[in-house]
Structure formats: C-alpha cells, structure tokens
Amino acid sequence: MDEVMWLMAESAEDWSDPSQQLLFLSLIDFLKDTSKYNLD
Image (cartoon, rainbow, N blue to C red):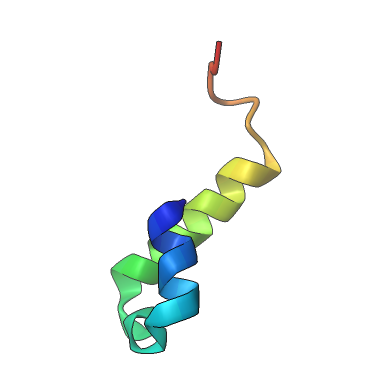
C-alpha cells in the first residue's frame, strides 16, 4: 500500500506502467472485500 500511495503523490508517469496500474487495482479489490483472505 505504501508503494501505491507514494506513486500517487510523487510519480504520475509511473501510472502509465500497466504493472503499477494492476497493483493499484488489486489493492482496491482487496480493500473492497477482505473475506477471501485469512487475516487472523
């Protein structure tokens, strides 16, 4: 999450990198529904 927040604030050009976009989207999906993950 730290990397995504840093990219949002500091490196707008990195958002053109598909791997960074996928990282951001996967984190959003995780935050929307954490039931798939056992976070005991």
